[in-house]
Length: 348
Image 1 (cartoon, one colour):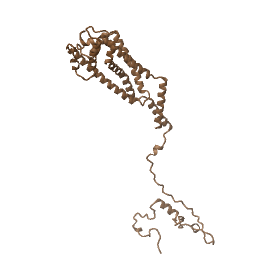
Image 2 (cartoon, helix red, strand yellow; image 1 turned 135 degrees about the horizontal axis):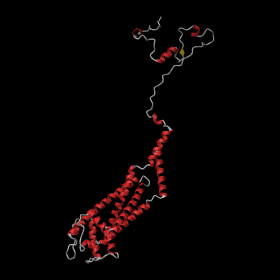
Image 3 (cartoon, helix red, strand yellow; image 1 turned 60 degrees about the vertical axis):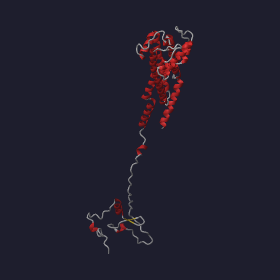
Image 4 (spheres, helix red, strand yellow; image 1 turned 120 degrees about the vertical axis):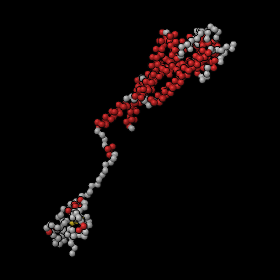
């Protein structure tokens, strides 16, 4: 007969902890307490230590199936361990106050003007007068203006024998020299029909100095044009930003022209001399009345040139102000454009 008592099984003597009666897992403890499981999954109640009437029902009655009075204890299933999803916090909506605060911050940033945009607009306002002045000077320094000037009624004639055709021919050489890349010989080798040099060495040297200033101004004008092109490309996404810069530049240009016109009217000779002292060394730009430069470009020519330059610049600045004026209709279009951009930003 086999001994089924605890500790009598084979290998029980090798258990140093003497805990053979204890199961290895908690679920085994529950099963042990509830009784051994049958093959079909129903728990069989333990009979040890209980009265006979509690261990099993009286099955002696014929035709009646045995009824179990033992309560079946459900087996506790182990709860699986679940790691939190790494993006679980993204699915949690922040409080409504936090959502409103973030929306207000986005709206404030959308309404504010970045510092870079303001800097560009200020530079446009400052540099616009220079660009317009250089452009007007380029229009005046041309044979077309010489023709208009020499043939206009009231222009003073040459007391030393130059006709209007002579002035136009010789003056065109001087004007072309300012715009081309030729050296001083371009003017130094010119001679009268008599063989005498058209310009003296001092006159050629002064024209070379004038050419350096003019070419530097033209180069600065090209740089300014590139700046305004870049400014347009950078500000075009902001409705009205580029036109506001032009609008301010137009007002600044008009103010500069008015100030220069007042100085010229109050003292033309002083204004003319200070202008030459600003760009040329003393003694290099004064000549005699019989010298070719004075005969081709008398004082009236410079007065007319300054007046035409001022009118052209003032006209261009006025057009900038008129076409860039922030009318209610233009402000409405800009406001609608800003609202559309803001809606697109919120949608993103």
